[in-house]
Amino acid sequence: MQDVAEVHGRKRRSDRAVLGGLCLIGFALLVSSLDLVPPLATTIGAIAGFLLVMYGVHLAWLVFYEREPEGPSS
Figure 1 (cartoon, rainbow, N blue to C red):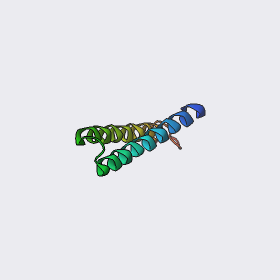
Figure 2 (tube, rainbow, N blue to C red):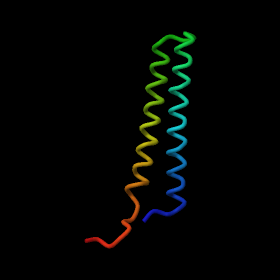
Figure 3 (spheres, one colour):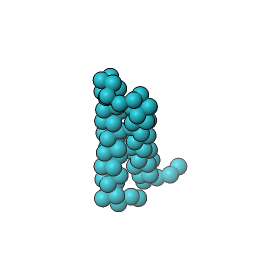
Figure 4 (cartoon, helix red, strand yellow):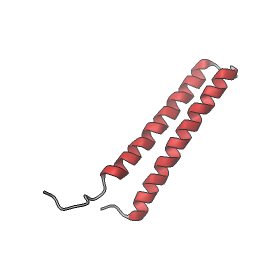
């Protein structure tokens, strides 16, 4: 079973990664709509944001599936 502090740390990292990724995607979309930088830069920013979101989902997945089963094995 995972330590409670470890679980909270993983959840916190997961939340930060997902929120940071969504902010990066939103910022890339905003900058792209204002034509402030070349399209390649905003595409790279959006891809990096998507990768951050996927990393956060992966961490959350590990927290969910690495917990101890609730009942006896059958």
